[in-house]
Image (cartoon, rainbow, N blue to C red):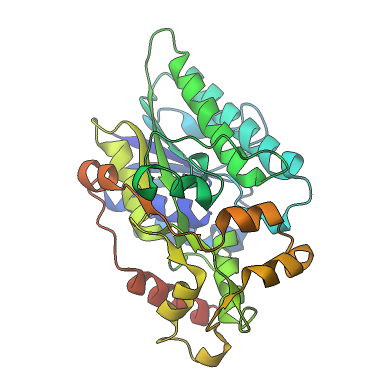
Length: 346
């Protein structure tokens, strides 16, 4: 019987991966920080009721060595998803708040994988920012298109520490996988863009959700930075994860995102038809000069503005479509469902 471990089962992505695995008939182990937090655990407890005998919950701490031993016992596939997503402007000490926890957590999980003889595959939730730091780097690539062969070499603990943490965590994972003297398990890295779509939990604290909610509430009504994201629906991302674990031929890195970036102003237009107070949504992009002047208040740098504002780019997502059979739903559907879930949580 196939048993899969999902780290971070109460998280925005992790919860969907647990659900997708259960619907595929897997027995699932998942880890949470505290079983006493009934509010965060409720969606998992509901899944236990819907899938009797198929889901077990374990307490584990990414920063405690050996914490995953019990949860990983007899598992053949490990989905390492748990990792904080913190917007750069919310970070005071990138090394301590983001980089060190991400690296230590990845190391602790993979140390346990090396000790658990049943594990045959690790699916790592990486990120597109493990491939690039600023949009200008992608624009400089052939055909302005990001591919899986590209690595982020410009982020640092002080400049976009989140991107640095994802790049270094993925590099660490590949080093650990390649260091096996007699390879027993292999690694597949899923690299999503900005993850959006309706959360399964009211307790979700994903930074991507908070960013959109600020827009919904009118924080950007007088103008929004002309910044573009590569986007993926959380439901499509869960499909990609499970396929990466199930398909023996899955290998290497996968870009999991729509093939074209989307500006924040275009996001506002996508949600406008459904928004109850559409007048609070931005109707124009903020001029770059204004971003320069407001940079101290926005907590962004001139370097970031020069490297990202007004730059659109493409992504080669062919491998995820052909090998993982991901069918990307229209962005209109993602934003409609995301906004409706936001309203339901108010």
